[in-house]
Length: 340
Image (cartoon, rainbow, N blue to C red; front, side):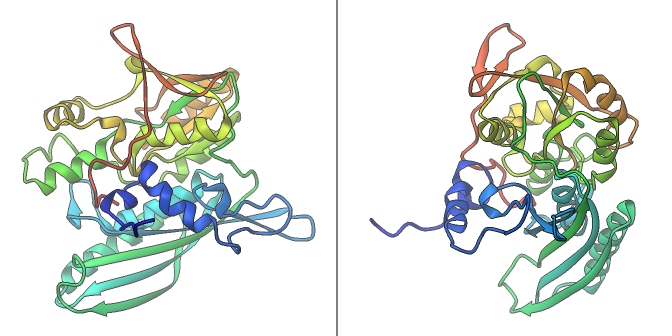
């Protein structure tokens, strides 16, 4: 077979990135051992490492790298994303974030003032959930080697109840914790110089508070944060792993009018665009309204909505406003690269 080359699609979420993940998960040392462990083979947002003779303590571990362009945008910057993204990967597995590491690759000539601004954003995001930055590393590379700065963060958290993105059940309803497409469109319009910063602002935020409120209400079965590949990728992954069909009601999807309009002009489906402060949940039907109310009580969940339900079958089907149906397909990759 001809030697294939890595393209931008392989790093943008969706099915393209799956080819790289398949290579990683084929390694012989990607599985954790012990009671109730979840390793790389599960392709969830993190790994669960049981501690203790019977695995009664569950540590969740995750890592992420961040290559945002531009580094600063309406609603956030690369520092806020680097912390929020890792916190959110822990949160959607039911874990309270405890500690993060930070590795920075900084380009020669990078501004100290901008570095201070990035670090201040990281500190503020950590403070929102009571987590701490406990270790790190810094490398400096030659001018022109990277776009200013690349940040890797890894995090650990502790979970009493581990939540998987593969645990949707027939009869569950689908809840999204807020409006979709905000982050990716914010990055795009800023990158292209459109003056829409007052209409489209990134949603980047640590969502542990939203998740904690939902779990306290009870009935949460599955969770995933819809980052690269957006809602379309997240809900398809959840449906495929659980072996169920998810039906989405287009009329109930929360999308800001500014995002919807910009996406239409640019020919982009907002459901395929990255979000950095949202969670998609599968919730028991008899607890859905209680969970929805709990989410809306948090300032990051005020626009939460019930937007679908789970039935027998496979795939994800949209019940359109016009009265028809269409498949929501997993994207090949995120239509807006370099967003997180």
